[in-house]
Image (tube, rainbow, N blue to C red; front, side, top):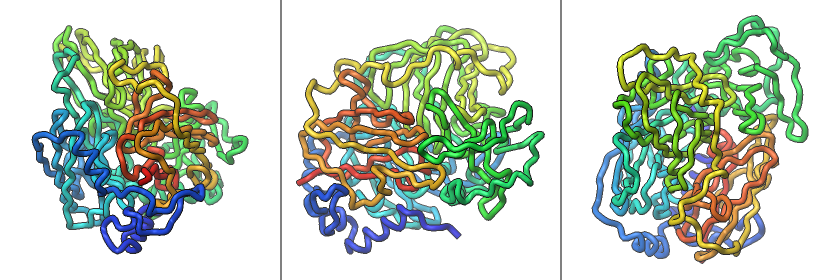
Length: 550
């Protein structure tokens, strides 16, 4: 039996209390913001006239109609078949491609056994089409359908996924490419590369069971090593040798985080209705400031395929290729590189940057990067290292005959120059106009693995807790990470700037102990989610709402 998630329970409560689709969102409630601020009735409604006016200003053009069917599926990951959920029995789901200025009309048919939704990640779209149940729309019930209709105003690399419980960590995701009718880049081929970590349907595991295990935290974990084979442990498909392993347990200062060096899961294979233990410990990365993740996934995928049976991209030597990278993972950052090649970064999160060369990139969950590569002659691995987790996903680039490199081959570029988002500069045409913030919202990222009590400003998600803004303001989000874990923070409906001339982003990595300032213009009215894009952190409470005042 599935345990209702916090968001599902809250969403149901909102719908029942409001007595209608968006009644609670329309200000009929009496809840107040977390700072004793305005009442719910003082906020704009997701389907209000202001939202309609903002959509009209985007000048919706010709309609591009598509159908999405969310359904239980049997999926071939490449030598391993699993039962999961997907869009149209494909993994990833079929790519949607529109031209900037067109209107996307996507009808979702829900054939799943529970309610769902579709969030259009990264798009500045009308609020009532954002796909956040209990906030901007009612859940799409099992057996029902819903049509999302909105202008796709900004070209770029985007994607879509549910915003219902931990459904995103199944197979419910797909690319959304908004093409630029005045595309300035020149290239011969284009590849979309979707990265993912996979647990659903493997040995009885489900994302809901993973969340239930994580919510027990370290306090509820059986740390008896009696059942562990220290000599050769197989944790989530990863063989670990005993030599050099530190089996001692220690608590990190201030946050109660328990760590073990090189220990990939918690008490060896704790069995239950949700399969073996998937709790990961000892996954560390200097790039991520220490702790790399919570979940020991058995597989890591590129375009739905394992490293043992990868997708092959074909080209001719000398071809210029545009690669659009999307991290659709639930709990994993990926470090990506193309063996034997350097990449030129052209975009991040859909928006252009001043071109910059690099050997490798680091993508947090929800982030996207576009690169250009001039391909060489041979067969090369396109490798996505699961950062800190000692496993990789990969595809192959083939421009001629020859044997493919083994799955264990690690391109030297992974250890070469790596560009971070804050080292990029926004292309001049998309930079925010100079100006000081009219309003600063401090968002302290709080919680620990010990209690698994992830939150913002010490308060778990409540749709009535809102951070007020007014249309026309320059708003600064100050993400203050007080935890020992990194968090990819995502704002719906807007893009923000990292620094005065930094890249335009909708998702930004905030390292432990660090503060990241992100400025945006309040130009898209409604009630917008802001959350960690680690699906298990967000579902445990690391979410909040930015709301426009009337």
